[in-house]
Image (cartoon, rainbow, N blue to C red):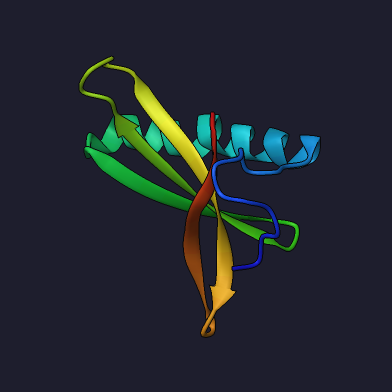
Length: 89
């Protein structure tokens, strides 16, 4: 794992990364999720030298669309989602 902080904390992001991830969610992920009508979709975006996965789904309890951002780690020549830390858009 590439992070150096304990699990349970929010994903550490710069203001620019938060802005880019938010734009990507509202401009790409949310419209695709509304068109696709799938229960649980994943989207990936690289911001600078960091890779992120966004998980978008409709919460059955609240009936709200939820998006959680995870950072990916480069492991064995592939990006893998690191679910230890997250940020909710």
